[in-house]
Each structure stands twice: as structure tokens, then as C-alpha cells.
Image 1 (spheres, rainbow, N blue to C red):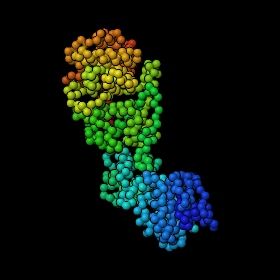
Image 2 (cartoon, rainbow, N blue to C red; image 1 turned 90 degrees about the vertical axis):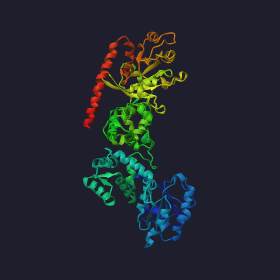
Image 3 (cartoon, rainbow, N blue to C red; image 1 turned 120 degrees about the horizontal axis):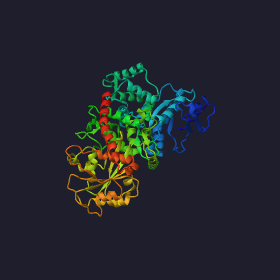
Image 4 (tube, one colour; image 1 turned 60 degrees about the vertical axis):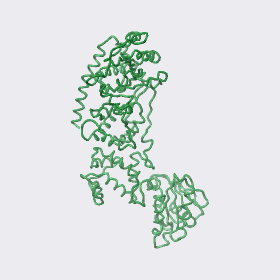
Length: 606
């Protein structure tokens, strides 16, 4: 939308000259409202032109206002600042200021330019996008005027550049820096020819010819010493180029890049970009698909500078520089596998992404958005990274599942050994667990297990033992683990009560864990012993477990839990059949060794 203003300066003539392409002999007091169709404008946007007069209110729908003055009339120039700009500012909301264009009409009547008088005004008012001199009589710059009006709306200077300082605004630098880091696929701090070409193709659908690439780099070389390094474009060079585009009036180039990478007019990432629509029916779960894991693997490789298959704190910080905040707290290091230094391993890194996608898919979409998944992998949106699994009821009916992530809820009285059971899954014995700070503890643990040769993720969740407040979320899972302390006579009763109240009629398989089995076993103060209870309710005998070991605790029990989660029907039917467990765990041992060997081989290739 474009509005003109002022009296006896020729604004109505300007509108009529644009429409009829000739100067009107008779000019009405006001021109009718006119809509120029999209197909005749350079930007392919319909433009609605309203001829305003001084006694009309400013339309709240105006996207741009053209203030017309007469170049041969000093009073009309003075009125721009004394009357029209204050009037517009009074009648428009401060937070949604409309871009202004100063239009010097009747340039055919003078030989000099009014620009010397106008430049100080442009510097004084940030809302003024540009100034154009024209003549309605000889049609000079008429179509350009309306092109600039469109451009002021679609590609405004305001958010990008500060004319007084002659430099880009900090919010623009921040956005372009993120774009540079996302486009720097090998994280070496420069955009090489391949990366520049990919960037060019992504933003403008066309690669740059080799000579054009050289020309771009030469422009940077001529203007700064550290803009080109090892024949690639540095961040400084990249920012310099965009400053140059803006200074030369080529804002649309920078805006095309910003919008392609998800930014809105306020240089914030749009909700549509960060949170694309994804439907998740009830009883379905969310997982990352193969492409998403490949992408995340490439992000890991890009930041694992020392190639030790783990991310140091500095490498983690570097990885998340494209985020507006630090998404992983210290609890993550106690949720996934780490190396001896406590750094997140490659396996731990993928596990954390798997956990986020399973528990909070919207957050996972947002994170993938910051990393530029849909741009680098040329997908419509981040939603392309997500697999929504089929309804769990269908899995139960068909007695098979395609899911890769299984949730095990851990319930037990306070002090029964639930946290120890979680940490043991990550390979930590009691000695290592004692070093974990209270405020760094996690209620989740996730890692991979192998069942019949298939790699699966098992997600353990420690449920707080508030018996009367167990929500549906606390109960929704694929397998339940009831933990009691063999050395505490009152520990088992909680397990029995929880089972009878919540799980006795459910189809969710349950396992009873006799924790702290290295200690002396005492008689439990309950009408049935744990073994009798298991027999009565037809589940496996209590499984002895301890994390008070010299080496990493035994992981067989986690393979059993995953197997029960995958085959709930078999977990009940195969109670008496020990070969069921044997088959599953032998497969696990072989594939755990193979899996690591295969990763090492992959890493060598990379």
C-alpha cells in the first residue's frame, strides 16, 4: 500500500501520470484509489495507491507513505519536517512506524537538485527510506518512485543498516553471522568455493560461475586485508559484502538471504520456520529418521575438531553458537554416555537428540531449525526430520513394532536405588556416581541396547515416588521397572502397592529389581515375599542388581528391559523360557562389539 501527501505539489498528477503514462491536462482534486496488479510490478506484488489529503486520517493499513514536495518551492520542503513527519508520527503507532519516501516533484521546472537540502532531513529521521526526484510532466522517475515504494516495504533499510554510523545494525550482524556459521559446512571459519556455491544456489537458485566467484572475492580483497583467507570468504568478508549491497541500494540481496534462512522483518526467526506443523495422533511417538541422524552426525563431525569422538565443553559451546541460548545444561552429561573426562561422546550426543525428539518434538524442531537442517538438507521444513510411529495398539495387535525408542519408567520408594540404576545404564559404578553434584542430577538416562542384532534406544525415566500423584505421563511407557532395596525391610511395600494400584490390569510388562544386591538381604515387611509376589502376578523373579562394582556395572538387565518393551506379548508367554533372554542378550553382546567397530571404521572413512 502506498499513500501520497501534500497540497499543490503535484501528487495527484504523479499518480495519474503513472497510470496513463502521460501528463493529465485536467487534474481532479483527488485521484481515485488505484490497484496496480502484481504482474506489472517488478516485485510481483499488487500495489494499492491512495491519494491522501491533509484533512484525511492516516490509514492504519498504509505500508509506506510518500511525502511529496515541490523542488521549486522552499516552503513545501520546510513543511516536510515542520508539519508532515510530526503529523504522521502522531497518527501512527510508535512500534509500527511506516517507512517514508520523500518525493521531489516538478524537477522539470528547475535546473538544480534539492538533494543538498534533503540529505540532512534523511539523516535526521530514521523512518525515511530514500528520496527520489521526479517530474509528473515529463514522466521522469515516475515508475522508479513506485518501485522504491514497494522496495521500502519488502526490503526495508531500517532493520539492516544505520545510515548515521554507516554500518550494519547489531541484530543484522547477529543474523548474518549465524547464516555464515550454518553455511560453513566444515567449520573452518571460511566459505570455500563449494560452500559459496551451495549458499548461492540455496538463496538464489543459481550457482556462481567461477569468474563471478573470483570477482566477488577480488572486491573484498580490494577493500580489506582479512576478508579472504586461503581463497575462501571469512566472516568479516561476508559481512562486508552485505554492507556493500545495502550501501549500494541492493537491500533485496540481503533480505533474500535472511528470509531464506528463516528470518522475519524484525530479524527474528519466524514461528513457521522454527515450529512447522506436525500431527502426532494419540499413542504415537516421535523419532528422528535416517536423514536427521546423518545431518546430526555431520554437525558432530564439524565440531569434533580433535577427532576424539567426544565434544569438549569448548566444542559444545561452538556447536551451539547458532542458537540464541545454550540448550544443554550440566544435567545432559548425566543423561547420556560420556568419556572419562565427562565429555559427551558421539553416542551420547545422538542419544540426547533422540531423547529430546521423543519427549518434546517441538523443541527438537526448534533446535534443528537453529542448525539449518531444512536448508542444508534441502527439505521443506524441519518436520521432514521426524518419523511419527504408528499407534501402539496396532503394534500390540500385530505383535511387532518398527519403533526404535522405548521408554522404561523406574518406580520405587525413596532411597531404593533408582538413580543408581539409571547411572549404571551409562556405565557408571557407585564410585563414579558419588562424584555427581546434586544440582547436576538427571531423572532421565538414554543409551543404545541391542536386541536380536537390532540397535534400539532405551529411555529410562525415574518417576518421583509421590504415590498419590502419579499422572498419566508418569505411567505411559513400554515397560515398568519396580525397584526395591534388598537391605531395607520397608522398601518392597511401595513396589507392591504401585503395581496393584496402577499396573495389575495393564498390558505394560513389569520387572522387579532387587537393588543393592551386594548388601545383606533382609526380610521385607509385606504379606508376600518379593519372590512370592512375582509368582502370584506372573512376572519374572526379582532381578538382583548392584552398581557397587569395580568396573562398569553389567548391562544385561537393560537388554532384557528393551526386549520386554519390544515384545510385550512374549515377555508374558516366555516367562518359563530362559532361552528367550539368552537369544536376546547374546545378540546384544555380539552387536555391541560390532557396533563400536563399525563406528570406528566409519570415522576412519570420514
